[in-house]
Image (cartoon, each protein chain N blue to C red):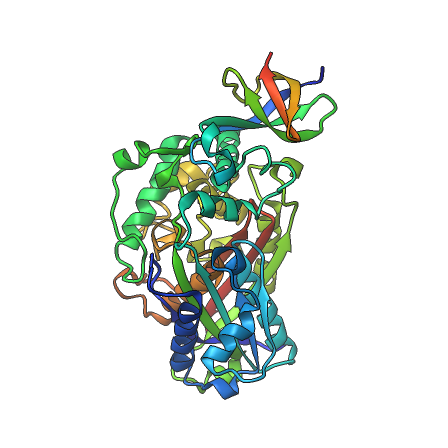
Length: 68
Length: 386
């Protein structure tokens, strides 16, 4: 499984219509091994800048990560 | 290139106006601008409209002729510009090119947005359309979330604090309390700003600009013609429009906006001035962190110093370099498509010495910085007295 490092993150409280029921939720920009960055959802415990995360699944095209 | 001047200014108040539609707001600002310039509709040769999301907010398309017709501009080219929150900045840049190059002598530039007829979650979704729908937005990012991630990274790299962000909000509310056209004329305390309801951590409601209705307009003409108008002409000394990646995760760095840095450098070069010469500025504070990053990118302070500089009061009304004496997007309000032109009106009002209670003593050279999305469009304009 791919892993990466949290470049930045936020916990969203005021959500758009499509995600109202999921708020609050955490999203992050992850720097993957190799340097590519992408934006995904964090599952489980909150993570911070510098945390190592693992890409665990895709949900409706959204990469989802979990703290290592 | 001919020297171009602002010969007329017009604004509606900013706020939530359930009884006003988009067309009436745009027409009011446009008419006020024509009256201010002493010119009449038949003298206007082209109409440039800045509007971000009229079709989504109110369902109306084909907005430029829709408004031009209401204002009495007959059969002139009428075109809408969309560049997210820099829509009317982009319209202004292209209108300036048309007058500077000699294609037209006199053009009207109006910006408008009607946002408050939609509930907040829908507004959030429409605004998110200025981000990357296939990536960050699909993952759940909102605009506050994008700027929250920018703030987190800025805090991490430079030690910027919640107090630094709050200082920007407190200052802009203080300024806006003196602006009769501001959406929220309410002074707030540091304690209130720090205790605000979270929107996207670390940003609270007090870090976010307002969802507003409103319009603003400027009349551009040659400096020679502007000298015959009733108001003192305000000269466009330098300006530039630039762009960058839309998606935050495709930018090399997110603690500065290269588009703003480049637009600033080009505008300074054209005006023959440097950051140290700028006496005051209207800065695009869609979020408090955006004002901090902009004053760094424009060279007012060194990179990373924007937070401490703001907290020390240097950007306050009586500080060494006043920023957002209008109240900024934070307190004056942010009807997205109107913002770029409204900023130019506010800089021009200071230069004309018509800023009322918020008039600065030193106001002969000012700058306006308009930002689209999370730094994907930037427009920087330097104005001065003739």
